[in-house]
Every structure is written in structure tokens, then in C-alpha cells.
Image 1 (cartoon, rainbow, N blue to C red):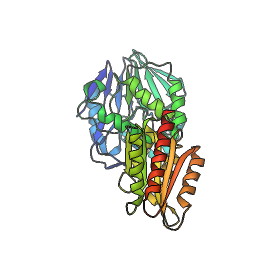
Image 2 (cartoon, helix red, strand yellow):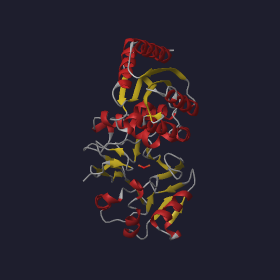
Image 3 (cartoon, protein in one colour):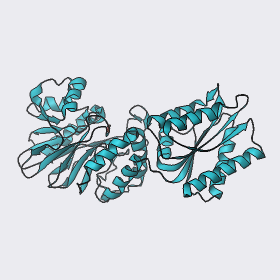
Image 4 (cartoon, helix red, strand yellow):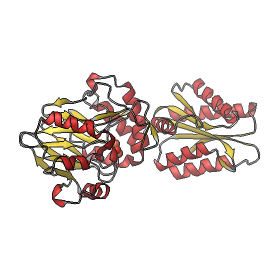
Length: 398
Ligand code: FEO
């Protein structure tokens, strides 16, 4: 059982999930995931900060009761209603009949809709900037809509320098004993933060930017997210990653993603990659769209500044896994990329280029170059692939 005091009067009551294969039914969890919940124990009152997925409710309630040692909590603060955090609300409401649920107007509507908690006397509805006095601590509520749902909000406890940030600054990965970043190796969590952000929150970059503006006067000592480690030593790094990703600002490097049925389009991808390396690009990620999981392709497409996508022609359209990828990127409003494309055909010469141009137009991207191959690779295609690579490399360095 994972119970511990983070700083004076603030406790962790979250759980690990190493059973669920796919988060939201879609995104693989090779390292598991934590559903973080917390408990704030002031001199006048006590608040639970979020709950956990219903499958983990027994472990969660046990953690809360062991921490409270017989006391009853006064409040449950609900920062986010996605069921990985709100799923245990009905059990909490039943167990502590005098507990008040703290949320904004949208939260209350969602609790009624999801869980049929309809007694209005159970709710304390807060607005942006409202405060609840807990004695030696105060909870300041900041509404941060669309990070990741409309009701999302954060709480700042200034007396302890603790920000409860909801999904923001979170990542996949169960907690393997360590809870605060000072007591664990953060390598896997950093990589999983890119995947978590791009897959789950990626569509809402401008709202993340608005939330970060709202937080600009706050200098937390601890950021308690709803997934992954509590950030303490690495707050600047983590905020930097979220800031860059939400501005769609890529790191140095190129992601190549291709769809190939018989290996011909794959050969063009290899030629482009070799050309990039010869032009000095060191960070090159290549995904065969038929084999890489979508979540990793989205993550790398967000992470790196260069994006080169290739596709065989299939039934007069893009190869379906590539088409699905471009749709996923379009949904997430990916922008600010150095983008280039390549494709292959046997009898329909213009389909792939046209669909990639349409993608670029919709995304506001400029196509830096395009290589089209008829059937199998030859020297002309190899030269064109190398030229495209040189063009992309030059653009990355400009
Ligand atoms: Fe972890 Fe948007 O829920």
C-alpha cells in the first residue's frame, strides 16, 4: 500500500494499475498507470483531492482510512470528471454522508449525469479564484477548462506551495515505490509524458497555454498531478515540456512514418533517412505504420520538428494506417512542422500527393517536398529521396 506524506499535512492516497492494457480503451500501458489522489489535512478541515478508477476503489478507500485514522473528511475536491479519477465518487459519497463535493458548475452537472448524485446539499460550487479556508491552509481554486475536459480545474495550497494540477503535467507509468521525482529515475516518465500529452491532451494546446498563463504567478514547490510522479525537483523541466508541446514547438529531429505493403515504399523511407543522417540529422525516428502503435507515432510526430510521411496507394486513397495517422494528427491540430511526403503507385499517379496536400492545407503546413515513385525504386527515385532529405535538413537548420 502506497500512503505517504508529501509535505506537512498533504498525503498521497493514489493507486497503481498494472492490469489495464489500454488507457481509454486505446493507448497501450506497457509501464502501467497511476491514478493519483491526495488528502489535505488542515487544522480546521480535511479534503480528499480526487478519487480513482472504480476498479481500484478498495485500495483507495483503504489508503484514505488509514491516513485519516478514524476521522471523516469534510470535502472531496473534484478537479476532473474523467472516470479514471471520478469513478469512486459514488463510494465516497456513500461512505461519508456529511462530506461536501467541491467542484465548479460544470463538475456538478457531470456528477449528476455520470453518478446520479442529485442531492444539491452535497455540493459546494466554486468559481475561478474562490477559496476554502482549512485553518492553517487555504485551497485556492483556478478553473482551467479543456485541460482536459471543460470542467477541469486546479487547486493551489499556497501555505505548502502545492499545486494539484489534474491531468496537466501528468504521464503514463505506474509508480514503482518512488512517489516524488527526487526518489525515482524519471527517464521512463519523461518519455511517457510526451505520449500522454500528445495522445490525451494534445488537441487542447491553446487551453494548456491559457492555463499556464493563469499559473504564471504561482511558483509551486510540489506539483501533484493525477498521473505519474509528484514533481518537485524537475518542475521547470516538466513545465517546459508542456509549454513546448502545447505550442507545438518540436525538438531537433525528424519522424518518418510510412505505410508499405510489399516493401517498396519502405525503401524510399530508408533512402530519405540515410539522406537525413548524411545531412547531419542525428535524431531520426522511423515508424512502419503497420507495426508501430498509433500512440507512439503521434508522440514522435508531436515531439520532433521534422515530419515526413509516406504511403503506398491503396484502393485509390492512402494506405489505411497512414490515413488513420493523418486523421489523428489533424484532430490534434498539429502545426509548426517541417513537413514532407513521399508515396508510391502502380496506376493511380496522383492520389497520395493530393491527399497529403489536403492534409497540409487543413493543418496549415507547407509541404517542403514530395517524392512519388511508380512501382519499384530506381536511381531517379533514390536521388529524389536524397534531395528531399537535404531540403528538410536545411529547413530544420534555417
Ligand atoms: Fe486522467 Fe483526463 O483523465
